[in-house]
Length: 248
Ligand SMILES: [Zn+2]
Image (cartoon, rainbow, N blue to C red):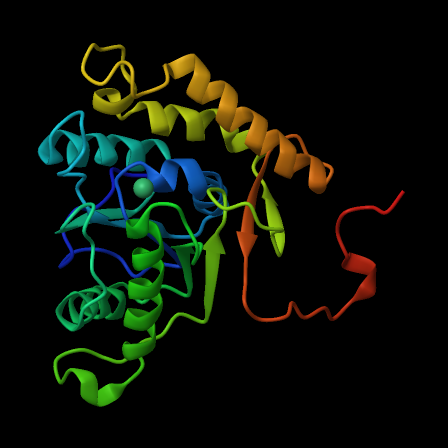
């Protein structure tokens, strides 16, 4: 049973998986497949976009937030919110860290997905550090008298934008088309239009590019489409018989 994503932090459910990203539509390109897969497996998932893209060439923050809600519905998220922090000049400062910490404490995610820590766009690596440090502060009881301390058990980094060897790849073969549909829900960004026409590739080009990348990572694990992730800790294995990805 899926329902429209909650938009209200007060009534939001506690989450199994929370993805944090700098801009609306980052999640649809980097970790939307894994979020959808987890939701279909019965886990409660959600996303926090830190900025509304107010510096973007196309669309307005209001339109992009509206589009992100439709994308959340397609990806079967139980929650999505936009914190409306400053786009293109996102800062990792104490006030934004504490704001984000409060939201993480409220949502209590067990797994936190952040953007990979190196990126071409400064907002992406700032979002990574901001998310990591906010999650750390979340565990310190005296940080805030009004909320229960909480830290996610696991932080994983969506590395689709980065050219790095992933720690693991999630098979998103059955979810790839829905993920593309969620990206194209941002009609202000990906619809046919004149504004920024020389700056933005067309829809077919974007589809082709993202399909090639997903095919590449899928190929690494013997699947059609994959989404790459990096983790900082070593993976633990308890049963050698359950190791995935065949050698021959
Ligand atoms: Zn972005």
